[in-house]
Every structure is written in structure tokens, then in C-alpha cells.
Length: 60
Ligand code: SF4
Image (cartoon, rainbow, N blue to C red; front, side, top):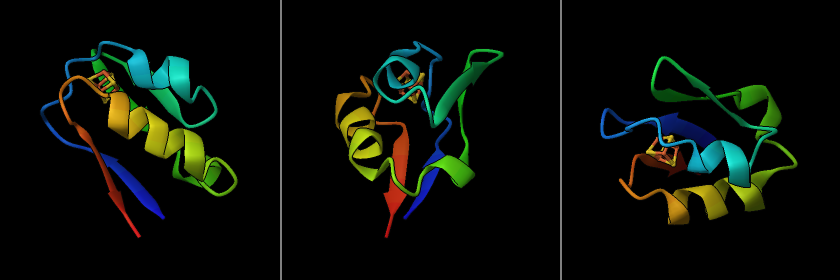
């Protein structure tokens, strides 16, 4: 699974609260740590579903 962030991200921080292992916030944008996605797939999906801007892109 591959996680990326589109330019729709507003840096609200919701993803970092839902999946702190994977997402950090830096200069008003989320940054996914791809190395941590394996084993945290469910929380990544949860973060994507709950992103208010639909900015989290998940590819299989
Ligand atoms: S929840 Fe969405 S808009 Fe908010 S910081 Fe994460 S990717 Fe960006």
C-alpha cells in the first residue's frame, strides 16, 4: 500500500491524530512516513476516510 498527500491538504492535523505512526504535519501539510505504512494500513484508511479535504491518496 502506498500513501501520498495531494495539494488539497490544509494541514488540519486530523490524520496525525488518527494515525500518529504514519502522519506528521510540517509547514501546514501532512507528510506520510511510507516506512510505517506496513502494519498500520487500517489507521491509514481511517485517516483517509476522515480527512476533511479528501487529500490522502491510497494506492494498493
Ligand atoms: S487530515 Fe487531510 S487535510 Fe488534514 S492534515 Fe491530514 S491530509 Fe491534510
